[in-house]
Image 1: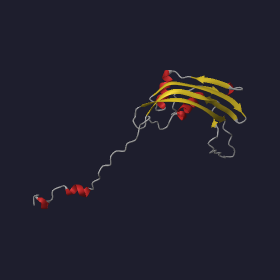
Image 2: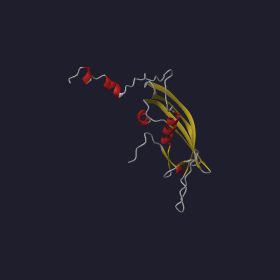
Image 3: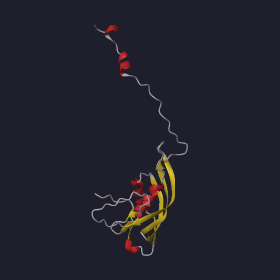
Length: 172
């Protein structure tokens, strides 16, 4: 079962030519879906501008994302406004042919993303960059973690000492 992305704007590789620029501005219903999927209280504004150009090894996707979101403070659980303004640059390439059952694993962090089926979903990249620009541990200014007072641990034997015994006036 595949999950439908909250925002999608697909381009085909044959549409890129010598370069392509798109401005993406999801409507209110789409912003609500994005907020729900990304665990935001709200996404009041969101816009992305992306340019994709061919390179020697594939394509380069670059641009910016801007928005106004509301996160939840990790300590107080109160709403916390967040302004997003980030730029990005991502390399893209098509998968290489695998020959003679050879598996190629590239653990390089700067390895390009793979283009599947000759399509690039700019909407998914916009949402990804939005999430990467958010604070993963949002905290309101002045919010502090206060550890609860330690409770006195009583051993089971200390609890038993409180019960009456046969020698202390119980039936015998």
